[in-house]
Image 1 (cartoon, helix red, strand yellow):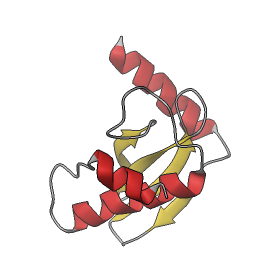
Image 2 (cartoon, helix red, strand yellow):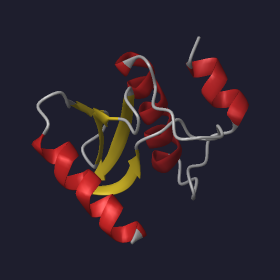
Image 3 (spheres, rainbow, N blue to C red):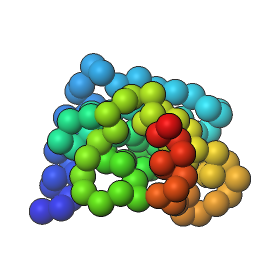
Image 4 (cartoon, rainbow, N blue to C red):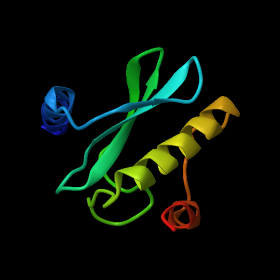
Length: 102
C-alpha cells in the first residue's frame, strides 16, 4: 500500500506544472514539487532520475510541506551538497533545517 501511495504521488507530481528544476551540478539536481497536505517538497535527481522523494519537511514530525518554495529549494541544495561530499545518507538535522528556514 505504501508503494502505491508513493507511485500515485510521483504520478501527480510529474503531471503538475508548478515544479521547476534547479541544477547544482552536472550529476545532481533538485526539483520542487507539491508537498503532502499543501506546501512544497522536493525531489533529488541523479542524471535525471529521481533518487530521493521528500514531499514533507525532513527531521520534523508530521507530514507538513514547506510553506515557501525558496526554502524547499535551499534545503534540497543542502542535500545535494552532502551528496557531492560523499555523505551517505545525506541526512539533515532538525537544526540544519531550521537554519535554512530563516
